[in-house]
Length: 366
Image 1 (cartoon, rainbow, N blue to C red):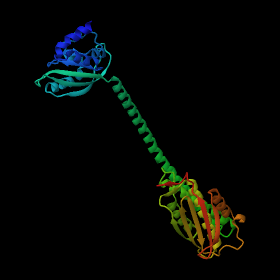
Image 2 (cartoon, rainbow, N blue to C red; image 1 turned 45 degrees about the horizontal axis):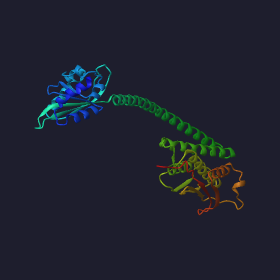
Image 3 (spheres, rainbow, N blue to C red; image 1 turned 120 degrees about the vertical axis):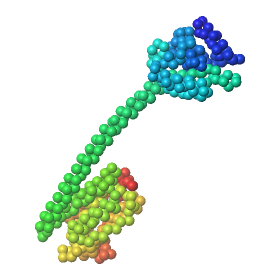
Image 4 (cartoon, rainbow, N blue to C red; image 1 turned 60 degrees about the vertical axis):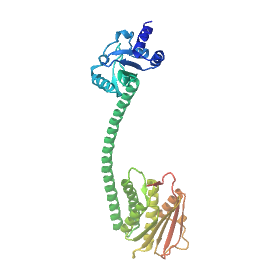
């Protein structure tokens, strides 16, 4: 009966033609709705508001100054909002205020003017919504975001250190490749007049191919792909200089065609073996002229190596060739779903064509 008596007392405060209807609307709201006199004293609070604020009897707070019910840290915000309402403006803020029984709560507060029929501000309406769950969830998200930022910063720092270490490793690997290649080529020159010299030279060319794959990957380490045109052009130039041959390279490849390191190494080995064979059989007393042509159509790659040497014997059969280089070419061509064909070169010597399948799972585009 106390609550009913409080509501009846509030009807006089509300002062309208439909007092009962207005009161029922206020009481049905889940928010804490309060009417303040112009001096900031509390004259009404709806029943749900008392429940939210854990107030058992409105008489315990009736006539109290509203800011006194809040922690001191919120007094300035409340005073500003009430002054704005007295001047006919609404204000909204968020603040912390425990209930009458000390339960911690956060509130989204809207303070508005209540006008008389003549437009004069006669009271202040304060509506407080419990947003404790929202604020706590927001704080949790903020804490998680700060933790995530800290973890990202640590990972970025680790990645930066790793990048420096990888750069150092790359430098050492490049130097190691260069030292091994130089040593092998020096030994090949020393033993140029015996079979061992040719074998050592072939080994140097094969390591040079792997070195070029490593270098191309270092240019774009994050992609994990090798730009085929740049890689093939650099490799043919290296081989020409190392083997004292003129190697003209032509590519008709898409500029953004890239392959994974495994296919790049296989294509490089094909180039090295075919160019090496052309020089080996071109004659020791002359500078062999070689033309390399690389083209792509859809997912097929065609590699052609031509020379101006003496050409192939009539009974040439790559399947029965005893040389390791031709066997390597056959193996790589078959592994990549292609075939090795041969014939006469427009330059007067031999021509070899390798048609291979580019791996759909390893081909990348810049």
